[in-house]
Structures are given as C-alpha cells and as structure tokens.
Length: 291
Image (cartoon, rainbow, N blue to C red; front, top):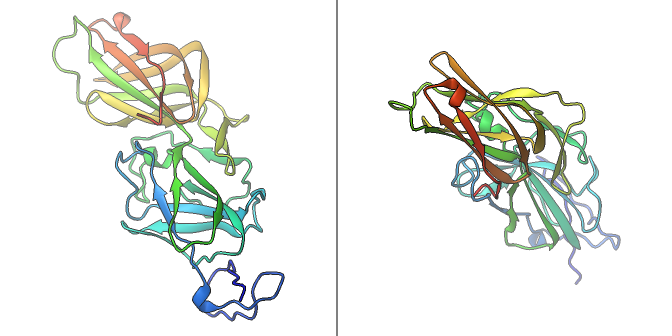
C-alpha cells in the first residue's frame, strides 16, 4: 500500500478524513511521522556554549524548490522551544510526501509580514538584561539556518545555525605611560552605526535598511577590559567618531573606518594613555564564524 504523510497541525479536536495527496489515500495514524529538529548553534553564539532552555526559534517548511512566502507554506513560522534537552513545536508538525526545504531563525517573533525583507533592529543598549530574560546583546544576535531536500524521517533533522550580524569586540589596553589598573567603571559606545537591517529568511542574507539613521550602541561588558556588540553588517567608510570609552567622567572619542561583514568578528584595540590626545585605536581584520 502506498504510504502518504500529511503535513498538518494537531488541534484540540481533530478529525482526519483523507490525506493531503492527490490520490486520496487515507492517512494511517501509525504511519504519521512528526517533524523533529536537532539545532546546532554557531561555535561562538552569545553564550559561547549552546542554546539555552527557554530559547525559541521560528521554523518554515516548503516543498523543495518552492519559494518561501509569508503564508501558505507547509509550515508557517512555527514556534519551536528548547527545554534544555529537546526542541518541541508549539503544535504537532507532521511530514508530507516528497522533499522539503526547511528554514529557521532566532530569536522568534510571533508575527512576520515579509519573509523577503524581514525588518530586524539590534538593541541600542546591549548592556541591558531585558524584561523577557533575553539581554539586549542576545536579542541582537540574529541566527539563521536551512536544510534543503529533506524527506520524511523519524530522525531529527540537523540545522546548523550561523550568525547574520557582525560582532565587534573592543579591547582596552594600557599604554607605556598609563599608571595603575584600567578602571572598573569603563563603558564603551559605538557611534555612527545604522541599527536596522532587512533579512531574506530564505537566503539568510542581510542588508542595511535604506531608511535607517545612524545611532549609538552601548556595548556589553565582558570584564574590565573587554566589551562587545552585535552590529548590522555595514561599512564606515570615512573617518568619523567611532569608538568612545567613558570612565570616571572622562570621555575618550576615537575616529576610525571599518567594514563589518556578516558572520565575522572584528576586534578594535584601544590603547589608553595618561594624555587623552595620545589614546590610540587599532582595528584588526575580521574572523569568520566569530572565532
């Protein structure tokens, strides 16, 4: 007997009359396969370890070779949550016949009105913890994954996520004339950054929103000398105020040019001096996958 797998969402009351296939073959409950996912985090996600319990992603599924749409896909922005061991969908998701393309993203958003140009804005204060348990830094780390040509399987489908934003790391070091330790009250700001992006959820590509205005981003503090921020990939082509270090009511403003690439980490080293005029900035090359 020909087996047919039907993609549907289980509700509180459900009556299955016939399959979704054109040959009207009835769905056999024992043959139904639930879609399971095995999410693989980037090696240097914000936690630097793994996805955490209560993390949520959005998942789309289409027939192989079909363009991703806002609606009408086999799976439309389905919520999958992590319990610390497994990823489970809010509603049961089952396989259909044929081959499928799967797309997933993090952090989850309940309503998406454009999958070609999904608007995403990083947090301007990435030092904040946030009221929903997600820090401003983590909420700015947009992750994306895809798996194509997948057929119905009882095994969990692996999804390798990657970073869509660019990571900037700022390191403070002491110059030869700097006395004492670097103050513990240092704060670091990144100026002249456009915080809004448009993301293609089918391709995982990112571009700066054409309507975005430049803003200032407050970095996340890792320790007294290291700070970081997730930024929209972009190029600061002309020398403008770029990095500001604030400590003990003293502000060190440094100019610079930089090209922030998608999925790369760039490191900026700020050499502090007793004289504000001698503070220096060194911009290193990008490192792929934030490693």
